[in-house]
Image 1 (spheres, rainbow, N blue to C red):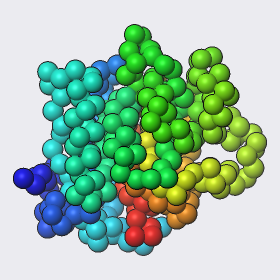
Image 2: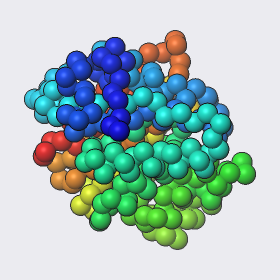
Image 3: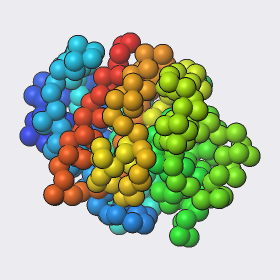
Image 4: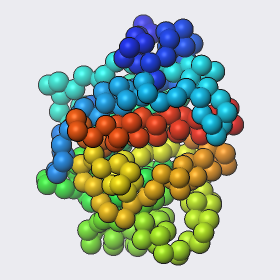
Length: 298
């Protein structure tokens, strides 16, 4: 039985049904409103819904790629995954199983969160489907703790869980971590582009190229929106000053799309804030920009 797409009033971008049917769409948007280990700001379980609503005000036409990719490739938006009465482990298993099925159907999968802990599931599904895969992490935090607050599945441990099945991790925008994480990065030669080093010119004026050179042929992107500076996106669980700005981040993602093969991505950690719609809109815009960049060669 084929998954059913959401109707125009609720789907990504609000596109007509003929461009959002599962059978005819190359791209699938999957909402995973998981929130189980948030330690500071809450509201990430409402993130997917907020992104979808805000996306209705994002233009179909992308001025950089000069395409309306939503009509050209089709974008199907599926209903939210249901985590009710499921443990954290079972919830992650549901996400991984669902994403694997979508990949098997030859869909490009976009997963919307939800807290960052969920990202290990779609990353694992893509890791099983693609050889020579790098995981590009955009984030304020290393998320390399072995466990946090008693949980090995914590949002603060997601990259450690990913590292267990894929050691080709490249981190960008990091500016907050504990001593355990700093030691792990040094000991294991994790390719980490700290925000401060980017800002002070350690990687030169074209640091984006250095990031891309660190990536393998195929790339899965996990994008925690707190990677952005809070001036760009304040509504997130743990906003950290000194983050990435919009244009430099788009330059990076565009370069990844043009020189590597983006096979899928997730966007996580948007927290609902009814007083601040800019964060929801910017996240929706980010999702569509990422889709455009991923299909720049397709």
